[in-house]
Length: 317
Length: 295
Image 1 (spheres, rainbow over the protein chains, first blue to last red):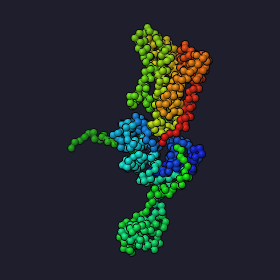
Image 2: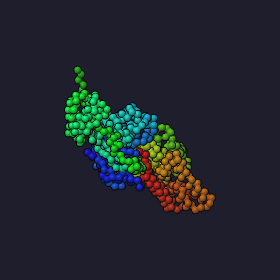
Image 3: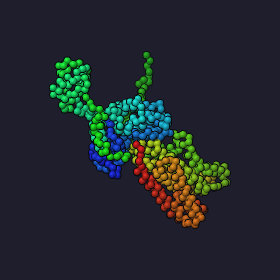
Image 4: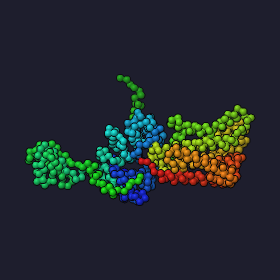
């Protein structure tokens, strides 16, 4: 099922072009929205939420155009903003129930859902505490709870781990992952933390200068141009030479590691590589430590997708 | 082994977060949800005591004289309509002004500073629907503040034989009271909401709203009384305009020329009230349509 689909979406703020022809399809699961400051992430999110109107192009969220039916779209969405400001004199339960009612849940159901959701995010014991007395980590959980209490079809999280310590980040990422895998809620995360996105997201959209630089499944993006990393206990240079002789591109790194590039991406090519390694190791009577597929990190993919800093338009939103 | 008769009926209702499959109300109900919630919030419901003080103080000012008069009228019916007109003239308006100056900024400006507005606008509420719901909640309380003492007095005086004599008179009295309460509440609501839309900080909005109500009243009063300027300059004074319209709506005698703009034509008073409400409402909608919301 397609959750968000855009074609040629343009958004300008005066003379500044924030989005210049965004073509993207976001499917089910957890999707990361990546981009440098000013790449257009927030602008794209506001268009998805129907809070601004695009200047050109086509945009569909859950099958509906948010410019035409913004309230109907937003009723099916949840949103957790980046900022940490929440009303300090409200209890978490009151806030979550109130937002759930605004999204169409009847009064009693909203109260019940607020309680269940706060237990789910780990604030069950704290749900009647004023939000003003809560830590940053607890406020992040309150923001997440209010975004999912009405069980939206898509929840948009803007920097959900901002201000959290490593343990809290791990917990929050597990929570986000659970939303998708256990509860069937699709998630769109806007984040600067590439490692976190790689951990929790099944697909990513990378924006650069108001355009989609790369988009797709994380596994596909990181496996592109992949090869094998072969670790032996000694004589890596001899192994690299043997593999070169066999027709592969191989490079020894130190005395123990050989990086072997596949001829072309694909399972057959990887299989041929693995066979060549097996034969060469046997011929040279080497002790093999490991053979692993080489993947680029998402950070490397992201860096490669970004243009020169001077090319980026500002993002005034 | 015991045979538990109730075993077949026993069920375990497992709680916890799970997909919601219950009823959902249409997006239009978000207006009602916010309106209802804001009514409680303005009165300090589920808030600390100090949040309740503004509402309590305003209602006290607006209702106290009526309460005293009702008390006296029930004890001493021969006192007749003691002070009835005074209640209809000034006390409710004092409460209305106090409430709209102090409570409206704490509703609207706090939404902006506390981040609630960004959550609201990510819900089915549009900017227009949000503003209308908040303005409606302020108006409702001001309306109640102005109407209840009038109606209560009318009922009590009627009961003791000093009020409207016939059923028809009583209906007319009720309609006049409703019109008077609307007149008292409309322009102050629009003014307070417009100021809150233009000013970010609640404290500043309180000061500006108070000044917008009191300064024109002071200046036009001086010009009319001391400089002999025509009473029509009162169209620049929203507080006195709403008071004048309220008194005319209730067919009260315009005894004080300065306070009630008695020299001004009724059609001009009506027109000026409507124009102020439309102008201030337009300003608020224009401003909220362009408001940058923290995300």
